Length: 435
Ligand SMILES: NC(=O)c1ccc[n+]([C@@H]2O[C@H](COP(=O)([O-])OP(=O)(O)OC[C@H]3O[C@@H](n4cnc5c(N)ncnc54)[C@H](O)[C@@H]3O)[C@@H](O)[C@H]2O)c1
Ligand SMILES: *[C@@H]1O[C@H](CO)[C@@H](O)[C@H](O)[C@H]1NC(C)=O
Image (cartoon, rainbow, N blue to C red; front, side, top):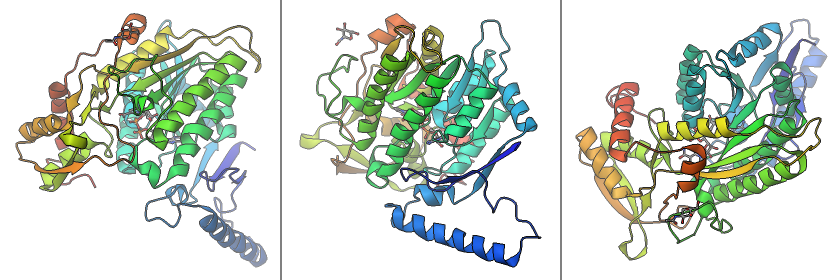
């Protein structure tokens, strides 16, 4: 069978059901009436089955089920493989070939572009879920298409697809950025965090440990693992065992899972703890993004305040600085040592903070945006809810500085100016605005 058809019925449910071939992907006229009736029952039956099984399907937010809406995605065939090979082809001396997961995401798009520009082979993978505006993901996809990066549409939990990709391309590196992000959304759709950040991570590591050669893996953890810590700045050696959100807990779990795969299979693993990344093509669920949208709309914006009028501050990090850190982590990653699923010797295991080292109060962020947009914001001071957001983040980056040569160079003012320029161009001066 040269064509492999997949239907990802309900990825948020453990032990998800998957059919090798969907009867709906190719309706045939000569199907007998009996067959049609039979499959209609199967179809309607499975909808009901998953509707009642999915814990989040009753909530108004899109669950994983409605998100993928039983859409079939197809892959396979010589043309598809040719596209993959072309995208992953190394074009510079000493270049690497990288599988970038979450390539249609904010960070994934920028990292993929940077790798491709310097001559590395890049293949993207993304499931294009609609956690936020998927038109923005499609726009990033066409941006990447122009630079020669192809994004395979699929889920990191799809082991057959992942294995197939490694059969086609012997990737030297994996840049793993696919995840369910966002702190507060974890209360609405907790299973999406388990699906992508835990099950998906294990699925990816499983494929990588069996691949020959095993790739070196760099992946995105988060500053949120520092949770309720009060000692600043946050250093890699600080404790990370009291997360304040399920999101943080899944990232922390990821770091422990990484330790295991490094220990048992000799996978070279580097975790990067990003600190509030912002910039052009950013994520609409993040404050700097929806503040911009709401200020332009004349809507009031909530500014959180901690107990006793305490300031809420973030170590905002500009996307170009993060990209440099990601590339440096890939370039300094040693090879994995295992082969055939067996460890041959100790392999590299690293964790780095990638921040900006200068926390800025959120009210200052708003003042900068007001100046750039030339619109006064309607500020609504509110108590910081205890549902995952921490009062401040502040990175100690000396480890990344010495070992990766990481040195952020963009301050918030400069970075936001670039973001606002992009925003106004992309959304047309606020006439058509982000939902
Ligand atoms: N942006 C930040 O401030 C920040 C801070 C800390 C950590 N991180 C981490 O960095 C990484 C990238 O973040 P981002 O801001 O670009 O987020 P993003 O949501 O824009 O990108 C993630 C991409 O992964 C895809 N994806 C999600 N689950 C998937 C799955 N199961 N299979 C395939 N694709 C899947 C999504 O469709 C999305 O395009 C994430 O791991 C995130 O947790 C980001
Ligand atoms: C930052 O971390 C390094 C170790 O990586 C440590 O030596 C140094 O003391 C830390 N700096 C501060 C200000 O905590």
